[in-house]
Image (spheres, rainbow over the protein chains, first blue to last red):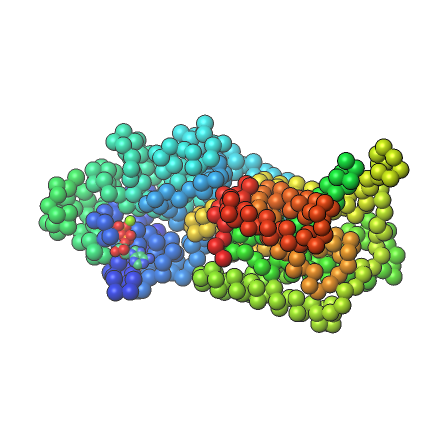
Length: 255
Length: 307
Ligand SMILES: Nc1ncnc2c1ncn2[C@@H]1O[C@H](COP(=O)(O)OP(=O)(O)O)[C@@H](O)[C@H]1O
Ligand SMILES: [Mg+2]
């Protein structure tokens, strides 16, 4: 049994089948890519896995338990965190606060602990702040911790979004086109960062990426979607050689 | 000069209660983009609950501070529960409905509470003086220049200002320094994303309504003591506090506080120098002017709600 198991997932928007019969598995320590042309249904798969959309059919199981019907915050607390195709930071909060929001879910002291400021509460807050700063250090954002998120350069915003997702202590991290809009050097740095995250936090990473080179370079396995259908699954080399994949990309050289 | 000073003191004293009510409008708007038009009635219910508690504890002859603590605490607690219930039963089922639907519901809740308060089971149709828990007294008296030029500050002015300043401080601490406050701010920036980051948005919204309602209750009790208790007393302060929230920048907490004080000052100055006939109208003139000149308000970050 894989940590994340998606089976026979179908998502219908009116007359449009955004995803049909989608199967997927991911375990801790794995890095699995999801590619496909625009509108193929990649983000839709993430939205179902995180509880934003309800599937028309099929199941999503985390550690064997179905999460279909659970609310997004519950699914997050069960261990699935994500980033977004277009960054969605809390723009008016500081960099540190954005990450502290991520820690929010692991708080155990509750409302009265907050109001009464019990020693347990204070210890927990200090510990979270410390951990948040450590996380920011690893992402090279520590020196900007007091800046508002909206004032960060674009590349930093994308990395902060990953840090915020990690702060919720996920077992599975979903990254939706994290390199979009980055320059080549930033992309290379990001690839290293993603590999580092997988090894350091030993979590499963599911990566949607438009940049084929990036996906091919870091993912052990790749799933290719086209018009909601899975047209290929395999290693970078296998997928690259698949005629259906080449066709879906209109004969563009892949990788 | 002394006349002006006196007007300013009165203005701040009245503005302080507007500020307390305006905070609830602005916080709820922040998280839900909803103008909670039932908020003035929560203020009124605060006064009603305080009235019953004051009557209930009167025979025991408690010292003033003990009585006030129980009255304020009881009203705040009851209104927190009321605010929770309003959101839970009236607004939550409509969470994803068009905003107009929710707005009309808010007006419906407001009418419901006004009419409930007019029944004798809750309060009754006629105004009642607040039981004499605390007597209005002049505590500060400046004589300026001559015996006719006197500026006075009453204990109720101090109570009103002291409570609203103190509570503003507490609120600032809750919002800026606690986890619940951080969640509240996160939800106000991005509702859906906060849920995906593990925040229980429904709980955060309940918390926001409870906090705002408890603050409105304090304003209700102050005005009940200062004037009297009546079932429709929430109407005008509710509207003026709404204007205050828009003036300060709807969604902005410091803005609501400043806006409340400013509306109180403007109203009192108009009353003192022009005519008391205009004192209620002036808030709406202010509203029209802000919407024309600066819809985002003094400290606002949002466009004003299009009604
Ligand atoms: N909420 C929605 N309502 C209607 N159609 C949607 C919705 N979300 C996505 N779609 C459609 O589903 C298809 C797949 O979208 P998406 O998953 O965002 O593609 P990708 O991320 O692969 O570019 C697209 O045709 C898109 O227009
Ligand atoms: Mg997409």
